[in-house]
Amino acid sequence: MAQLVVMYKTPADPAAFDKHYFEKHVPIAQRIPGMRKFTVSQGPVATPAGPSDCYLVATLDFDDLGAIQAAFGSPEGQAAVADVQLFATAGVDMLMFDTRVL
Image 1 (cartoon, rainbow, N blue to C red):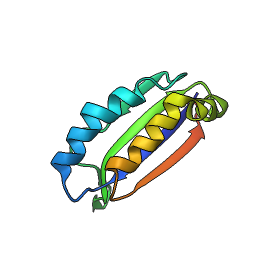
Image 2: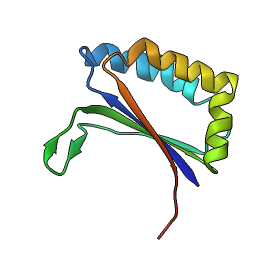
Image 3: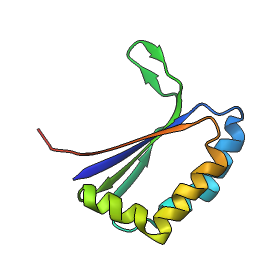
């Protein structure tokens, strides 16, 4: 399995971010081909030392890194990437990696 972790920085207008994210972005992202699971954080995002600059974290699960690359090369994946530019104005970090169960 592989994961894509998307970490959204705290927006200037959290209510506007939430409205766009949950009403527009999530339906677009749910159409990304090959995605096995899509979860988002709920409530404040913290670090062991206290608050973080992340507002929301999304985790998308795929079969492998190749599946992530193929997904984001698809029209649906490209639409999701383009949409991020419309609402994640405070910034966003994305990490992708293979995982293993220990």
